[in-house]
Length: 428
Image (cartoon, rainbow, N blue to C red; front, top):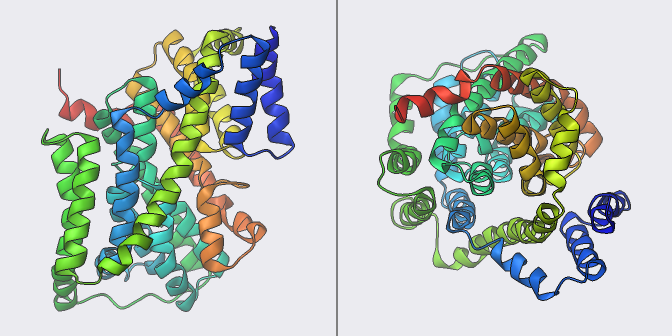
């Protein structure tokens, strides 16, 4: 192994172990390799900039902003009320409301932390008031947030589409099956919890209440229809859809709901900018690291080493899933995709796996990582809302994580779950 390869692998691992932030660790090892290999330093600046210069990546800040505008403009509350009147009467009703609300909000924001924040702020206290344990309520809201990267549009799918050079629209559609499977699994968990703990059922909503909720929520419900309909109808690209989502949410929040004012906009934009800055900084730092990894041919070598002795596709997929689950639980999900993308793609190509199916597996894996202890982003959002410790939320979330792993296995070994919708829309 060359000195450069040693720094990129062992040096990076050591920095992470001692607690250096991911993006900083990436920059440090990249700079070290440039010095050791006597590479012109200007290349680092060029690769950092080049890593963020994809048109598709523009979807990230706009979807982030759309989610913030919807929350501030009152549209997320409308979506929750619609879900409430539809499913609250079932056993575990408020849990079902949480999951259904997350499905609808995910179809607008594309972000797991944004989905967790939007529904958790309202529904964690609501579930506790209905008799749910606070840790369970928090864990369910955190797990429902995972639907953000699965139900299209998906920021994770945008990033993977750029890395793997695959159709982002097809990757969006490939997330529908896993997303609906996970939603169903979480609703089963909510039902079992409610029955075991004797949580009383809510009264069934009568037609006048349902009609009123649908009427008040029609503008919020139209948002995902416009965004997804425009993408799949060919009216605009995923990036343009993100911009349309922002404009639509802004117009509705200001002129129809009238809950959003000009004075609120700096704060709303600031929140979206802070989250976007973190995401783009990681992508930029990862691009220089990834360039050096490609120069050293580490991905093909590691892929050959990992697959040595493995002749069956199912064994390779199991290895990928175990590896990604473990690494996503302790590493930033964006960095996982950017850094390990070349390796994963090399493995998929060697075993002849459909690239859209494989993209669905990758996105599902990193989505689970956003809720898996110890450092999932959604965990910390849920902790901030509920005031509980990481240990309390982690203990309550393991049944949900196991359900996510079941969904991951079905997505991995039953390709139809992710490929049926792309195959239906894009017929040969």
